[in-house]
Image 1 (tube, rainbow, N blue to C red):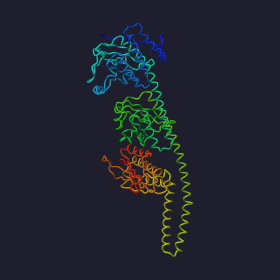
Image 2 (image 1 turned 60 degrees about the vertical axis):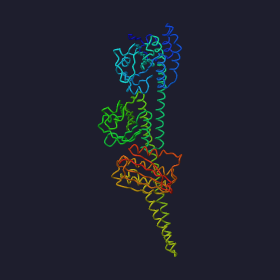
Image 3 (image 1 turned 180 degrees about the horizontal axis):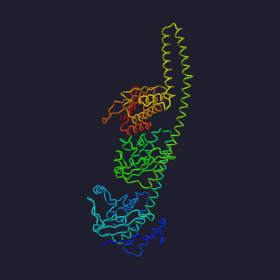
Image 4 (image 1 turned 120 degrees about the vertical axis):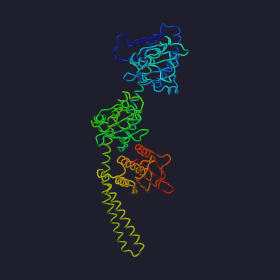
Length: 585
């Protein structure tokens, strides 16, 4: 049978409506499509109840993916077709962005391989000429490009465009009418009416999906702002931005990059299922994307693995990507990247807009959080200065006076045992005075005075923690810590130490803490590494206790290619907790 093509249904907006911007009324569209059934055969009239039931089924629900699955299944049942599909036209209107099928099982999908992209063949022709089409044998049509290996045989064909709010959304395809017959005129009319109802249902589902999507991005922005203003440190704040962006963009990774000393960008926070090898990656300043990003312009990449602008080694792991400047008040703080996996769908225009707005909100939250931390830091320094003055002017002076009284009593004592005991007490007072003076020095030391050596930074962190703990944790070092441990690993080790000491202060109720940094270890993969061990004699981790701190330690280690674990502590019978954190040098 020769191909039969029919013009699309009349525009429900009426004559002279070409170019009108108003979307057609759904009820008018359905009424107009159904009116085309009047005066047709009794066979078609008998199938009207089936059509009405199909229209009711298609119009139920608001989830877009479920709606598309329901449309192809209902269309196949209505026309008694073995196979059905909807090809969704991409934003460029040159091919297909998605292909929803019915009748092809999982094994057949694996044999066929990649789904059609609509750039050639009969499907491509219908994209550029969206008209109803009925074929007795599609393989004989000159526009046909054949089937890939493993594709089930298909001969009879029926194609109908689907319009959503007056624009072509895609095409509905039916093949292989059961019983070997060709699709009839009645089938064509029925499917056209169904396609009209499908357009209405898809339009409703798209509006609902867009609303839900905006709500998720808004909720994500609120979550980021709330978390950042809750007092997290800089590293944790950036990690929150990366994690939220990854979840909202449905991407394989969320990555935050900050400007480095050479004028390029460096990855400082990663959220991914496999973060190994990503943290610390640098984009050189001569990269084409760096100038654009630092100028505050977003970069959208169709395929990171093949785009010549993507010059890093990790680019081969990803496909579509958005790189968005974190800009606030004309100042670019860094970049937020959300790459998807290889072969994943590209980002839509709506997703790009929402992600750009999220990045701007995250940048503002970072600025506000940084200002809040500065205020809190100033208040802490002022309080530390007051505590240091009180310790020096009151406590040390009283201890010194007490020591003098005890020394006088020791000289007057005639009992040797008493004199010896008083002498030991005086010695203990001298040690206590020295320890208080060390604590005063730590309290008075500002961040600008902190030396760059890892050993000294560890000691300073321990000295700072001694004040709230009420005692001085011990510290041990194995190997050339300062010379072997790199800056990135050292920075994360200090953050891990701070987290572990904070956990011990808040939860452990410990009276003894030992800190060891070992720069001579071998990691399980054979690489040289450094291990931080923080052990205490406290109450240990209860079965129902929170483990957010331990999770933070693990994430920080895994982002560098290391690991974190915990076990029995220093107390009798293994009570307490020992945290072991290790990463490559």
